Length: 112
Length: 114
Image 1 (cartoon, chains in turn cyan, purple):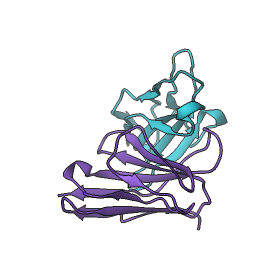
Image 2: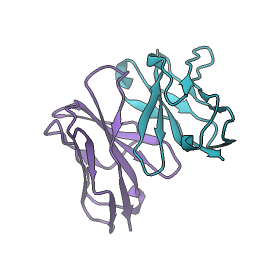
Image 3: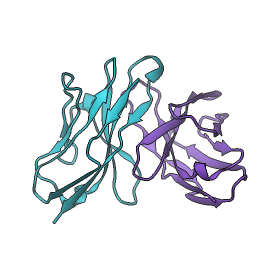
């Protein structure tokens, strides 16, 4: 079974401070990992995926297979980063194929 | 414009009523999904479809049913709504491909059963 854990339900930082949203996963195979974001009154949308090794809006995430983690980081938080962030995992094979499992979500608030 | 549409946006209904939540996408995607989300909680997959005439139950047991008669349409039906069905229902789609494909989400339907 696949599982995603986001230990922090709420995270508050000040503008310009570094931010790290934690995500740990459990999956027996080789996972595909994603971060989705939902801004106020907007739809849930993809922020980034580990396979792309990209930086979106200054955010990066590194897959650490040893620690089974996929933490989201940004060196200097901005007020517009305030949103709900979901870590998600997709299994690469078997019955998990293509189905996303989401974590509980972390509400990030960036104060001015 | 290619998009994924959900209607209604909000629905308040009495116990015992039959309801259908609509989801349509004009992106030509093969895969479609229904997720259920309670406030402040994670999204749970309740149904998915990999193409026409293909439907499967998700990880969270649900009394709802779905159909996929057309590629672009994936409605969800509750034969007899109950207060326990009160939740947000999110529809999503993704292109044909592997586990790396991203999901595109609709705006959701907030269902309240009185």
